Length: 257
Image (tube, rainbow, N blue to C red; front, top):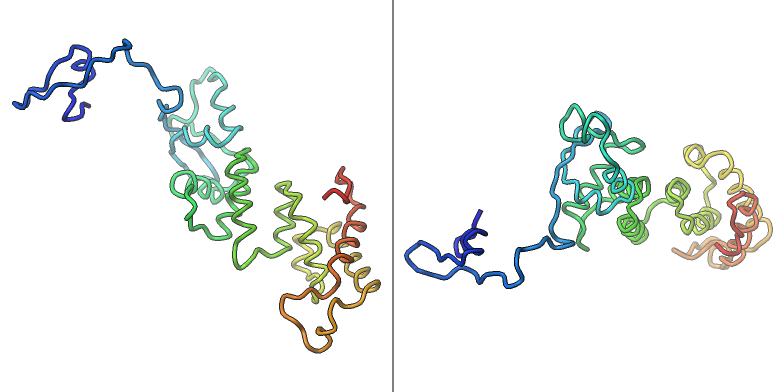
């Protein structure tokens, strides 16, 4: 379709003028010969259909291949004998390992939420983090991590440990262990179910060692709790946590974490 003040590409090639009575000249002829596609911004806007948990999504392929190494590699593969998948509902592309809710968070982010004022809930940032980790969307993953780190009120340390273990966010683990060691209340049954036997056992051991081997961080706690002040000496808690959790075969020196 031609813009009203320029006419068509064919008109540009012949130097024709507009026929609207104003005799305005068309755009000058390209002195460099036939127009070429821009290497970055001549976008293949093909749509693809995906099936996640019984829900069909039809979206632009461009956003997915731009953000995800996995999806980019998938679309780079030659089509099979049945042709290119994702063109009809019957041939929708299955996305295993993620939920429809997580895929929706990713689509909302790449379509509407990539600016700094994105208003996501903590649950949506978490869904986005899971999806971007699973499909190797590094830039999106980094954004989700930053948003969760600065979200207020902050994410529960138990949930942060669970997510950190599943998504290999190692920098979340030790600070969260330390937070739970500083907490007055013990690990609950519901929290233990989330954390698993090994992590719960090590946390219980660390909490006992902290309480047995160190005094309170502040005398003000004795009958007069101080808000936001650590219950035990943070340096000692950090040392205990590193020593206890070194029992895990993370393949890393706990002193470097």
